[in-house]
Amino acid sequence: MTRVEVTREKLIKGMVFSLIAAISISLLPILYKLGYRSGMNEMGLLQNRWFFGAVMLFAYILATDRHSLKVNGATLIKTAILGVFFHGVSGIFYLRALRYIPASTTSLIIYFYPVVVTIYANLYFHMQMSRAVIVSVGLIVFGCSLVFCDAFIQKLNGIGILYAAAAMITYSGYLIVAQLFLRGEKPLIMTFYMALFTGVTFSFFHNPLKILELQLNQLLIGLFLGLIPTAFAYAFNFRAIREVGSGYVSIFSTFELVMVVCLSFLVLGEPIFIIQIVGMVLIISGIVLANAKIFRTSGTMGSWR
Image (cartoon, rainbow, N blue to C red; front, top):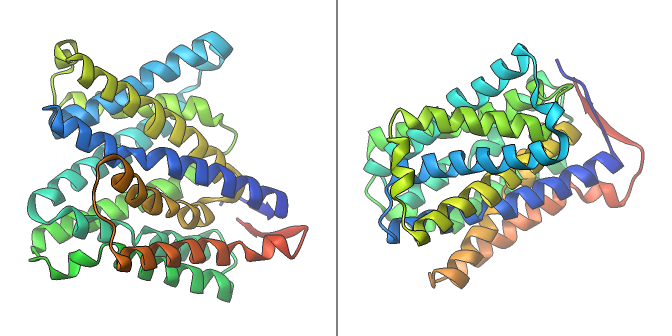
C-alpha cells in the first residue's frame, strides 16, 4: 500500500489544497443550474465540462511544460480508469438518481462518502482513527443531514436511492484509488488525461459536434465549467491527496457543501433556512476538529501505508 507520512506541514498543505478545490468545485451546481436555464441538457453540460477542462489544461501544459505531456502507458491506463470508470460511471449514476429522487436526497446520500473513505483508509491505509476524527466525521454527516433536511420529507424511490448510493460508492472509490495512482505522478498531468478520458466517455452519450452550436452564453458556461470546478479543482484535489491521502481529503472536501449553499443564496437567490445554517456550522466544526491538533503539535501526525 502507498505510505503517506502525515506531518504537521503536510496536513496544513493538504487542508489548504483541499479547501481551494472545494471552493472551486462548489461552483459546479451553480454553473449547472445556469446551464439548464440557458437551454443546455445534462449530457451536454457534462461533456462540455470535461472537454473544455481538457482543452484548457492542454493549452496551459503546452505553454509551460510541453515535454511532460509524454507519459508512459501505465499513466494512461491509470487516468483512463479514473476518467472512464470513476468519473464517467459516477456521473451517469448521479444523473440517473436525479430521474427518480430529488436533488436534495441524492446529495444527502452522496455526502456519506467521508464515512466510506475514512473507514477504508483506516482498514487499508492505516489512517489513525483518533476519537477526534470519529467525532469529526459524525458532525459532518449530521451537518449534511441538516443542510439537506428537506430530503427526509420527500417521497423516496428505491431505484433512485440505489443509483445515488452507487454514485457515492463510485466517488469514494475515486478518492481511494487516486491516492494509489498518484504515487510518482504529476497532479496536473494526471488531471489533464483524466479530463480527456472523461470527456471522451461522455461523447458516446452526446454528439461532440453540438459544441459548435453553442450560443455565446452557453459557451461561457462551458468554459467556466471546464476551468474552475474541473481543471482548477481537480489539480488541487490531486495535490491534496498526494500530501495527506484520501481520508483527510474526504473530510476537508465537505466544505464544498457550505460554499454551495452560500453561493446558491448569493448567485441564484435560493433561500437559506436556520436549520441549514446549523448544519453548516456543524460541518465546519467537524473540519476544524479533525485538524485541531495541527495547532497544538508538530512533527509526524501519523502515516498511511
